[in-house]
Image (tube, rainbow, N blue to C red; front, side):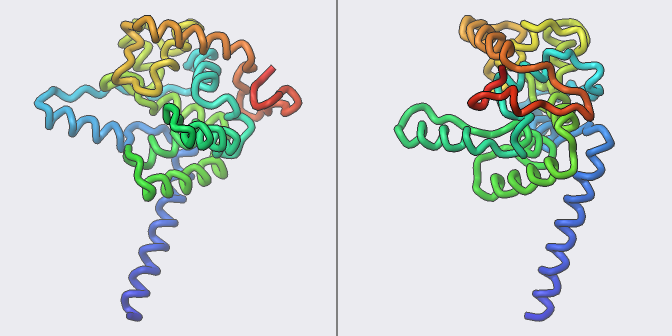
Length: 241
């Protein structure tokens, strides 16, 4: 039993030391590969397809200023205010789901970033526990600007396409920094399911969703640069003036 306890103790120490080190390292170095990218490649091979992996890491300065605003409007309007978990959204989602309506999630951009960079896709409680742990870590170590930069570079945005610069090239034939406002809104509209929803060939539903996101973008300020803060006084009921 003593030997087992020592092994467990070292396993715990190793887990915390390696995960904290990884989070600190990714505060400064680009994320060139994620678990989801690897999983998708194995799935493609298993299906007899050729490997499709389009991913370009670019700094925030090379991403359209409309893109972070679009994903906040679509995914997480309180991103600049919460500390990784939007408890208002969680409460609303729980009430909605309890009524038997269409299931809504409440994952923040921080949670999605933690999942994309460090974890595997899935809905198990174990994975959700790890997601909460990594969300806490990145909110503690990274700035909001860094979280957004990693998110926009690692999120799946099409079949074999990851990140803003890659989807800009393969769907719009341009660089990520040259995307128009409506193109950013259209990309954001695909994020619930970028395999099903194609920003290169948007359906009528996608175009409607794009217009909704563009409307919400009017109420969100320009995404702040590193070192700048959002004034909480500009927030009313969870939405921006």
